[in-house]
Length: 150
Length: 150
DNA sequence: CCCATTACTTATGACTGTACAAGTATCTCC
DNA sequence: GGAGATACTTGTACAGTCATAAGTAATGGG
Figure (cartoon, each protein chain N blue to C red):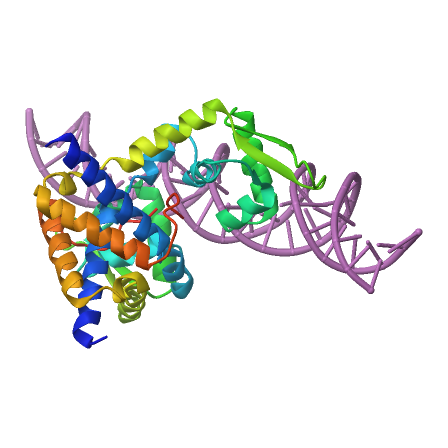
């Protein structure tokens, strides 16, 4: 890749990063759910099924004791519950409650609202942008799971 | 705007947000500088010239007492220094030291490195993406200042 | 069978960040 | 000229984040 391409990738990255940071919704999600964003991210991870405590620790990039604290808190709020692992009696599984799913839907609703800057783009350009971003995403080979915030 | 456009804007936003979150560099910046990301953001704000304490408080969305604490810390590390306002003896101005500028350059270097997913895009597509993002940015009428993290 | 490892929990401590109260010094406007 | 507001600082309390140490219970491989 030429220096020109590298400069261009840098421009694109800077524009993208600035735009996402300028339209940061994490505080809004945290406020709407009445919890920190990292708790919301844990709920997000439980979308699609149960997880073990250690898997949640890996996902959140944190140590097991702190996951215990977070899961305690969310369980106390009625958003998830723990239950024994069917095969490994050391392990616990965690799944969303109905109320947790509602909280998650609320968070998704906030996060997914596109900023004004995107909405006013011409239809053909919006389609182009989406296709290009889709290509970037598939090239990055990352599953489009929930966002990873601080 | 039609429902179709709205759905398309949503897709673009979701792809963009996921990509930026998946390539979140704030922890890396914090680790490299040995400080929290909000301290790094304060340094970023001083790029381009001095600011008053109250202006920094506004920028960081925090109370004045905490800005005092952060500025105390950064001054103690030799990254910035305070000096009296020439016209308002109540106010203090804050500016980067040479070492603070070096720290800022280091942070910028980390933040600006484009993720692999962008670098492998074809040259013509990369150019298209950059142009579209530039249009989004100018439409959003937001100055491309430093990123705003949590 | 036993030991090292794993899964999770409890306890503790440090740092980050928010918020409020109260203080000093200064500015501005009536 | 003085009262009210502003700029910043000091102090305090609290919540969140995140780490380490040590504990119990269970697993798996030698």
